[in-house]
Structures are given as structure tokens and as C-alpha cells.
Length: 420
Image 1 (tube, helix red, strand yellow):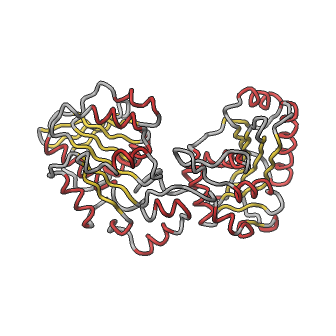
Image 2: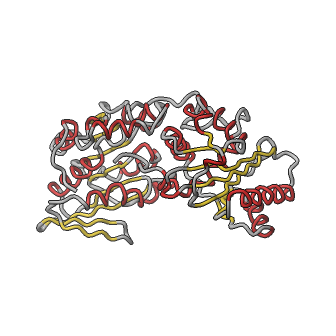
Image 3: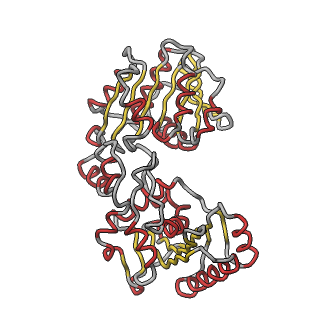
């Protein structure tokens, strides 16, 4: 990969290397050209100013750091460095002449992750998608740099809600913290054509459009799936127009006394082009025994196989192992625990599929799922983006449907959790 020209905003990232500022924050739209240039600048700064020192590269997980930071950097042509990546220690060694430095990848996926970074001394840290990492993890990483008076911190992220801790504590307090903030839009990425920008913008709607295209830190409120709620008939297909399916999978969510048990069958078309809701059903959980669940599940799956074809996998709510073990013992279906991606990732993926007309519902088979999609609203009292779960809409059927296809979330959605 070659970098032939920079936008003025990208050039500002390079100027940070020689500035007196300690921190750089780059936030804004997806595909706006933040990440690769920031990674390059971070490495150049480290290699020109330090020798035999440790640096941190922090991402949501080590795997996402390898995918989003390490691999794009290693694909850049013309670099004057010798690179050696040790997978066992998640450490990249860079050499240039007699100089050598060590870049450790850390994953900050939850509140316990701060322990992974304790004890190491770092001369600088690059935070990829900082808004997806816990505050305790980032604070621990920042503390690891205090030994070096010339250490620098590099943050990039896409917007979340205005109550997000990173927005309140770092972006709103950038001047107070001695940080330089650069706000990016897609126009700041010189490799994107106007057609590319329009194509990316067409993938999003509602709050996701405001955040990922307009780069705004805005609240999620109102309907979660507005594209569907405004015109549900646009997403229905008839049995006669059902396309060929690559796989058929079933999702199962188990409810408590005030919620529902839910079953949903999804078909995925070849090439991961679309998700088809084949059939869905939601049943009040109150007074429903395990025996009832086994019978209802068996009947549902038998009907799906009779009408649409063999079920390749069943993904059940992993919180209910006792019921899952009973289903495994009493039925012959290939039952697995649900993948349980972050709910906001499932919601975002669903919205992308809806906006791009790649999610369809078989007409007459999905009344419960249609109701769930049409009535789901954001919980405006939650500290982070969440669907309101107070019984006014059927969240259980949404969970079951998402369990059915989320194992292929990355194949279905071509963008990653963050920037390009």
C-alpha cells in the first residue's frame, strides 16, 4: 500500500510529531483517513526519538489491533524499517540501523483489562478506537507513560453518545489536558472519491448516519430501526421470490416471567449478500416449563426444516446452560451457545442491512419479529446506547433473530468496529 498524498487534516497528524503537545485526539467519521496516517506518524515519532524502548498499541482486542493497526502498517511500501512480529507476546519489533524499539499490542475489552498493562513502562501509546475501551484501561495505559517527560499519547475514535466518558473526559477537556483535537470527515481522506463517500453514506441511517458520516457525538433516541418502522412492506418478500440460501440457522432466546421465549430462523444467501428472516415466534415465558420449551422448540425447528431445508446450526442464549443441555439431550439439532457480540454491534449491523435493503422478512411468517423491529426504541436513560427493555417492545425476538446470524456478522458487514 502506498501513500501518495495527504489531506491538510492528515498533514496535521504528522506535524504533531514535532509539536509541544503531549496528546493528539483524532475523532470523526468512518473512512476519514485517521488510522493509517496516525499509525505511521506514531511509529516515525517513536523511531526517531527513542531507542530500545517499549510502546503500547491499545485496541478493543489484540486481534482487532492486529487487523486494524498492524497489518495495514506492515503493508505500507517504502518503509525504512525491519519488522518482526512475535505472535506469542503480541510484540512488534522495529529496527532501523542500530536503533530498535518494541511495540506491544494490548486489548482493552472490559474493566478487568487494565491489569494486562500494569507494570510495563511505555514511552508512548497509540489508542485505536479509544471510545470502545474502558476508562480504567486507558487511564492505566496513560499512567504507564509518566516515567518519560517526552512521552506522547495518540487517540483515534469514531463518535458515540455525548455522555460517553471519553467525550466528557478527553474531548471536552482537550485544552485542559494539553491535547490537540482534529475532527475528521470523509472529505479529509484523499483516496475516497465522491462516489465512495456517497456509497458509504448510503449504508447508514438515523443516529449511525449522524455519528459515522457526519462525525457527531449525538444521543441515540427515538426508534432504533426507523428505516423498517417507516416502511415495513419494503422489506417483505413472498415465498415465491425466496432466493437460494447458503445456510439456515436458528436463534433461541430464553425469557423470564416478564418476558418471552423466542425462536427465529434466518437464511443467509450465497456470498453473504443478504439475511432472510424465514420464520419467527415469540411465546410468553410465564408458566412455560422446560418440557414446554423442548416441545415448542422441536415443533418450530421441524417446521423450518420441512418448509425451507436443513438447519445447519442453532444458537441459544448462553446464559441458560441448563435449558441448553436439556435441548441437546432431547433433540438432534446442532445446538451451540450464542456468540453474543456486543448488542450495539448487532444493532448497527441490522441497521446497515436494513438501509442497504439486504435484510428481508418472509411475508406472513414474521409477525413477532416485525413488531419487534417496528417498536424498538432507544433507552434515553442508559449511560450507553441500549434498546429500551421495559416490556413495551419485544426485545427477546430481536435477540433470537440476531443470534441466528451474528456468527457471520463480519462477513455480512464489510466495515470494521471503527475506522479504516
